[in-house]
Amino acid sequence: MTNQKNNAQRAKIGALIAGVGIAFGLGGCADSEQGGGGVAVAAESPLLPSVGIVRTPADCMRLLGLALKDTQIMAARIVPASGQIPEYCQIEGGVETVILFELAMPTTAWNGRFFYVGGGGYNGNIPDMTHALARGFAATSTDTGHRGEHWDASALYNDPQAQLNYAHRGAHLVTEVAKEIVASYYEDAAEKSYFLGCSNGGKMGLMAVQRYPEDFDGVVIGGPVIDRTGLMMMFDWSQRALLGAEIPAYKLPAMERKTLEVCDAVDGLADGVISRPDVCEFDPAVMQCNGSDSAECLTVPQVDAWRKILDGPRTEDGEFSYPGYFPGHEDDYQAYVTGLGVYHGYPSSNYMYMDNFMRYFVFGPEYDAVLEFDIERDRDKLAPFIAEQDADDPDLRDYEARGGKLLIYNGWADHSTPPQRLIDYYNEVAEVHGDDADAFARLFMVPGFHHCSGGPGPKIFGSTGRPLVNLNDPEKDVVGAMVNWVENGVAPDRIVATKFVDDDSSAGIERTRPVCPYPQYAQYSGSGSIDDEANFTCVDPQN
Image (spheres, rainbow, N blue to C red):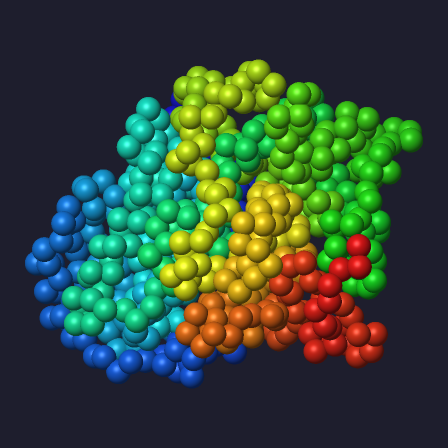
């Protein structure tokens, strides 16, 4: 392939999946809300006030000479304040040469706490940390030891150490080093340590809770990749289902209208958001064409493909199964599942991540998983990667014993990491920890919310990459809720999510809605505006 063709292909891939980049903590978002009205910068927050420490440029520069084990600080500079982001000291460094990291420490607005920002996809770059800075934290993150686009795992090929660093080791080492630098810079250790990440960043948080329970006091994760090996087989299953039954983008609006028609009112309120897709009985056959093919219907092969995507993979021997997706809000299918609709689901993010895992972790660069992988025959070949790449251990007793708190959120309309898989994992945690598991771990399922961002429902609640509004508010911000839980002992019993007019935070609020701790859901009281969270209560499901 010529360089020109290769660049064109990369541009096409980038254009299609740019909208999901933010879902993996990488900046840029197709539906990113604009503006910043209603912002509460951390230094002004009564929950996280500044501790009153002032640092000069000389304090930042002296860190260049700081002696740390297996670590080199390569750059130190003062970054001026800009909008909601306070002035900060920016450090660039490397652990064991290859694990690059950055650390950002407010010069005057530090809240006395440490923050780690989880990275998405296959990492390969250092995520944006401005949302942590705006809250007043000293924040760090890492590329986990390799460079590349978030969907590109080629740098990990045939390198077990790099794969281990990516899986969990790199983030842990950077956390330890960054805490030392913070203590040196402020001449005082951070009072508490927190983590926020989604998708692979969610997996990183689970890895910390499971393997390094002393790293963080509070961990907030969204849409986590719980068991990468199982998820990659599920992705391959859906891509194989679409081979020869491709679903073009022009059919997605009709699919979304049909699932909304069938599932919207199942929760007792027809409001344009499906709040209980788990109890909606939907059969893709209702979309089957009765006559000629059109934008309003699906062919028989397309109906079968969609059914497989919703059902998830099942092996004939019953030894492997994995949840598929719930019906509803398919507007993001092109980015996550169906791709261009011309060759299975290429280049959707599900295809890109699966393809890179199969080629650069398991089978080799020339492997075509869509054509060659057989779940019955080949699933055991992924087994060697389970021990280090999967974060599915439900025994979190070491983390619970040290007083750690875990807050998990997932969109009911997540079409990357299946919501049911997270519900299953949370139930496994509850089985291990007993009836009081929610004393340290809580799950919040968000209606009409896609993978880490986007969707038609109220979706602003402090997750990664969102507008800097309601910062540190324990009722409206997941980080504020976590800090309140860790430091004041107040467990979150609801988190209010916000939707702005035209998804523009400067245009005013369109709707607010409480997000409830699973298995509860928000039920309308029967009076008052359905756009006001005050008219909803969290109730236990009746079925």
